[in-house]
Figure 1 (tube, rainbow, N blue to C red):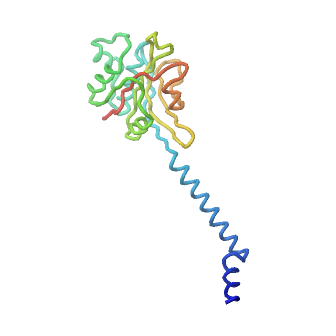
Figure 2 (figure 1 turned 120 degrees about the vertical axis):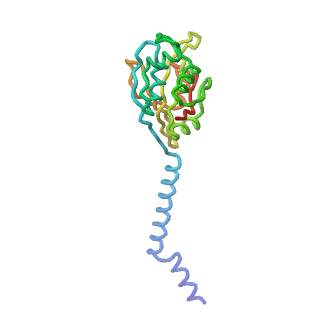
Figure 3 (figure 1 turned 90 degrees about the vertical axis):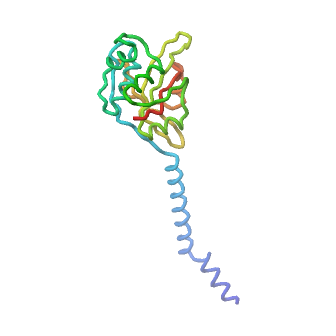
Length: 200
């Protein structure tokens, strides 16, 4: 009985070879667990939307809308879009409900809302291969000046949530990225309206 006990102890905890095997198993398990945890929180997708420069000073809404339409290769021009919505190609600002009307004229169903949409809505739309048209209000908001942008991608891991967007203003960088939180609100603007859930 005594000899059997000694053999048992040596087999489980007594040998250097067994200790090394246990250490390797534990290390492998930790690496695998870290990898799976990181993968579970990481994801990204970027839609191949066309870079679109607004053709008139107030046509950011038309440029962002045409960007979304031509993502589906519909071949719509800004002049066509504005003429349908406004009745003529006037250089005027547009509103989310006008964007909705124009998109639906070219058979792209969509919803619009005031304010921002949630991070889950952003990722759901992009994962459904649908860009998002975001209206922003420049600070201070009471001056009632704004801009429109087309969100085309996102990146997410356990540390950060980023949105990527196309800016149609001619002198601005076309392709941009910032955190979701700073896209919702920052010192320059507040996310004030959204056309989302585009269905082609």
